[in-house]
Picture 1 (cartoon, rainbow, N blue to C red):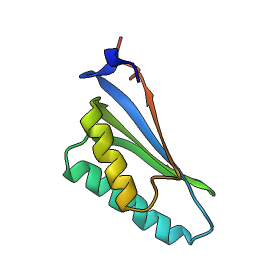
Picture 2 (cartoon, rainbow, N blue to C red):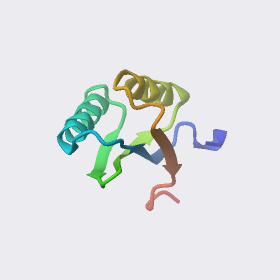
Picture 3 (cartoon, rainbow, N blue to C red):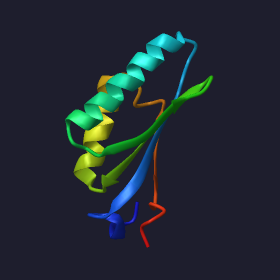
Picture 4 (tube, rainbow, N blue to C red):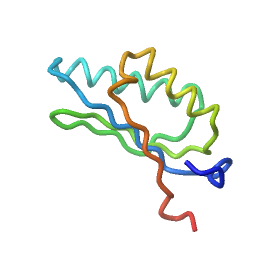
Length: 95
C-alpha cells in the first residue's frame, strides 16, 4: 500500500484459504473475526462470504499501519494469519 493511502478510506478484503475442517468451524471463525473487527472499531464490515476452500471479509477502513498490525494480530490469535491475504483497493465512490 503506497503512503498516499494513509488516512484515506479504502476497501480491505481479507481472504483466508481453508483446509478440510468442517464448514461450521469456519463459519464460527468468520463470525468471530467480523465481531472482533467491529468491536474494536477497525472498520465497517460491508460483506462476508465463504466458498468451498476460502472465506472472506470485506470492510471499509481508514488505512493506517496500526490498523493493519491490529488486523494481523487478530488473524494470528485466530490461527489463520499464515493462510490469510489482505488486499486493498480503492472504494468505488472514492475519486
